[in-house]
Length: 430
Image (cartoon, rainbow, N blue to C red; front, side):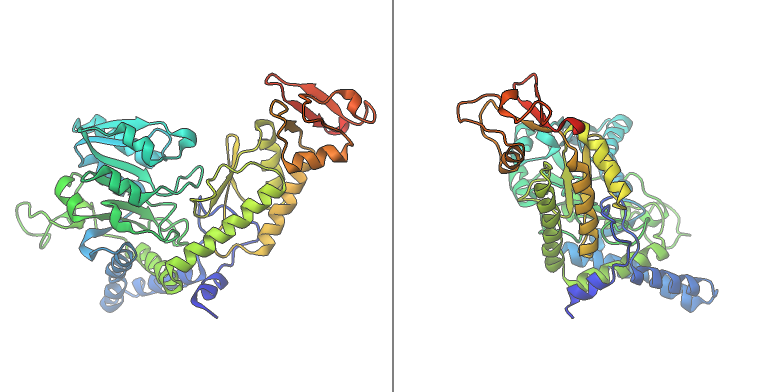
């Protein structure tokens, strides 16, 4: 058994769980390590307390190894948002970010702008919320000191081009929300100056397992504002204000050793399997979901060439609620938000989960109204098959399907829409 196969074997969640982008059920190894360390903390013996406390340094070392940076550039944080708060509160100049970014970036940047007046937020509004190099390039000028982006977009699953962004912005700081990407994407993290993430989703480590990396350049330009006892040097009884000069300056209090224990256990499992292997397997599982969506003629919003484990479906607005209901009825856990359905698979997502998904999609699309755009006459294979089922005939120069093309008026319903497409559906399903 390979290390990747060993990792896959640790997934013991119920079939149908396709919501890893929202929460990652804790792995067996994480649960076991947390229980063992909790028992040590319950003994009251100094040796046990010190042993668990050492998990903080262990977790920092493992995070640094994944990011390819020095350990003193890494801090443990209670959350991704708190790490980003440290970065934004200490930043000056202008930061460029998407108006459709996850609130951890948007809110922390706006709060910093309002609270200290040193930072100006410049929002861009990219198509479908997917940040591209061209979008960022249009917003750059001499006032811009930093660009902030999620490496994997939480809504669409789109993967940002980190190396290209690094090349574009030059000496400016690149701040990255790695929540949906850390450990799941094989990328050169050296392109980023600040990286903030958490282990409670894809790492299966539970909440409280956040971390942040502040490069040397970031430490030179981002002032530590929200520092506490852990942000000082020396003994707590020392007089004065002996500040730290490493990444721990961006901390408020000492890390939670039990959270560090969970994070360390999760990262050991991940690094043993190898991040390149994990990333490739994750993309393969996501591709399987895209194939199912294609089979059931459901549009996929996620870019097929640049993604990780998130696949977002964009059904017609009237189909979104029935689709979400069908998924729930089949025991498939997803995130339904507005008109989109977000599916997020993991390397341990098995054939049983995909079968449940297939069954749910089949039920949801069985009675779906199909919209055919006849302005161009370019009908996809799925729609052509549907028309053949109803024994309809289309000539190349036809811009509509008249009722007389059907065997009988009872067989199909034909209705013209505002943009000249038509709707074709059986009467009892219209």
